[in-house]
Length: 158
Image 1 (tube, helix red, strand yellow):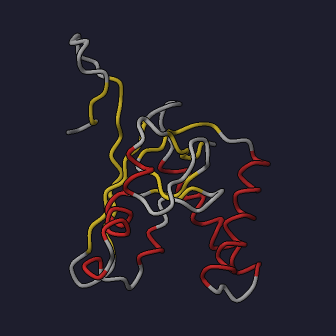
Image 2: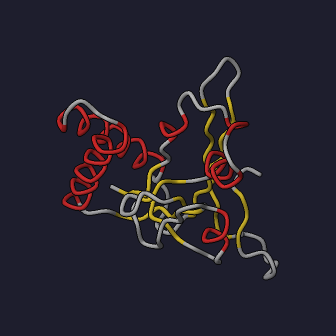
């Protein structure tokens, strides 16, 4: 099994997010954070998070880029517990068991998104959906297959 893990290619995350995630943290897309939120009402840093942020699972900060990487079952279960506790503390989940079920669903979804070769980079794009809700798309960044040494990465399908 794989999960998204935060990577930082430059210092931009420390400037554009109110609370940047740290490299090496496991991450999830976490669109639930924006349920019922009008992006137009968000401040600049929160709007950037709405548009492109993954949620790190240690400090619950934001990251622009993650990589797909293998995760041990024990570490996956630790992520479930950590996210469940966050659901109770930050979102008022009614109890830990309900929160753990929701956390497992979120992490299972994140694992599905990470089913790529190790170190494949993933970028998240979100926008308001017509009629409410959020539309989310994950872009896969792969090493360039071109012979041009100036292009190391390219968006798959772009």
